[in-house]
Image (cartoon, rainbow, N blue to C red; front, side, top):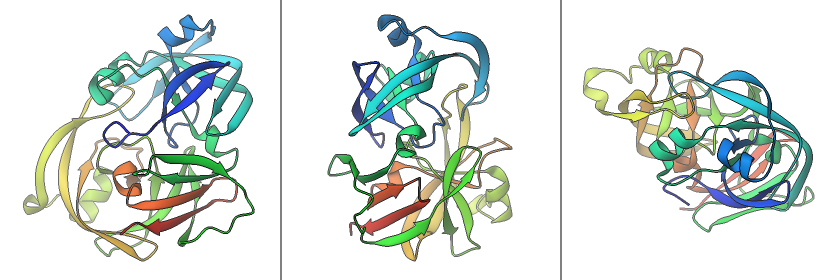
Length: 256
């Protein structure tokens, strides 16, 4: 762990690398300096948008083998991108690779953040805890949640989010979370695409499958196409998880 971000040993075309685990990344990302070091050649040039304010130029490499957590994924398409800005602003050390959701698409995984455990498990096991359905939106899996006892909404299941719960401005406005007395400050956020300013607000309760977490802080972003809610590792570390993207299920076992 680095703060609330998960790193794990991985390999790209057989070259070992410590990678950020990010279920919200649609593809695996490889830093351009690391790509050059291991002879990974990109082609074309496109702009991608992350959670930052702008876009960033990337290239793609085909036929790449990605290995992590007991899975070997051959013939992948990966993104070659300059991760220096994200490394500096969010991680505080060089970030050489990000393993994305294609790892999760390949099977069932057990995650216990505070125990430092992430591994592939058999589809035959019967997980304990609370079962929640997963759905898809814009390439990211989502789970149903309730904020402050309100209506159920879909929240991005984002293990790459190492900060507070993220809320869209539209959701925060229509639920009264941006009322003057509920704002507690501001901070800089944003991933790929550069920094953005977030407004910090109080969240009295976050409900997941009937389990309530109390007295949280959420960051309100400005993106017009963001999900209503994005839940990262600061929340998921409160549970022992079994994650099954192929079957669109996740099981939560509260740790306290």
